[in-house]
Length: 365
Ligand code: PHE
Image 1 (cartoon, rainbow, N blue to C red):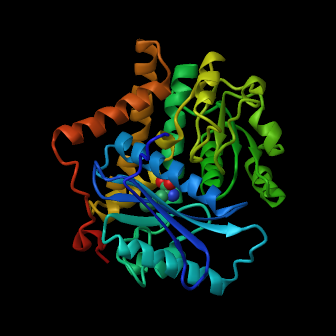
Image 2 (image 1 turned 180 degrees about the vertical axis):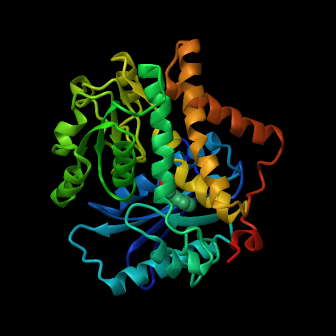
């Protein structure tokens, strides 16, 4: 039997919504846990649990690699197929999430994720202080997606540098798959810097953005296999499958979607084809870096942005380490994460669960 890696997992039927609310605290070795609240459809609540387990573990890696003193956690509210999430039921679900978060007493703080927004964080904030990214008027750092996008673009500069020897984005051929809050801003920024774009989304209405940016529009399937320098997954996870890898025509894959690999073995398949893959937890760290810089470290927007843009250096270092050690960026990233978690252990701070300090967690208005 495999071991449970997680410190704690709470599964509760929300008393208002009747929905399965799952909070997974993977690790508090580096500090109290944080991670977004995903409200999404699943065939079975167990699939939501599996998602929460994977995503919370990726959050531990994300914080460790970004050098932040936080641990990994995640919340999933698993909607059954066909469930209609009315505004009222949404509010009930959010208050149910808040109760579970509050019951953890600061071990974990939630934030926005796929299917939730700063407005939703305001609702959670009615019942618990342990929530990031409330709207600015409520003292939060608001939408984290611009920072996630800026961090992803910073990562693309470093990727472009190993492919073409320059960090300038002009002329870099990029396919962005997923044009939501993050992907849309990545595409807009890349276009402004002169990149050549293929854009794609499951929602055909997003095609208008391709028109505005002078980009080629493609269906998600063909965008993933487009002949470009870099494919940027910017929607849901699991897009990199065993079947897809042989059909890829890009030189690198680097994007902000969480959990891109359908399975860990896909990283080896990418490496065998000589396709550079930068782990998603490195590329997507901008949102949490911004939220933590502003809300916990009380830094200004400019200081936070500077830290977010530091992702370029992190990616450059990982790519350089992979090259000199003859390994992959994945192996180099895992090594970095292991080293940071190991250092926390040797400082003797592990054992006692770490909690968010309520006073520190409340952002200055
Ligand atoms: N969705 C964010 C992520 O996956 C989660 C998050 C953002 C958590 C901001 C806290 C603050 O990185």
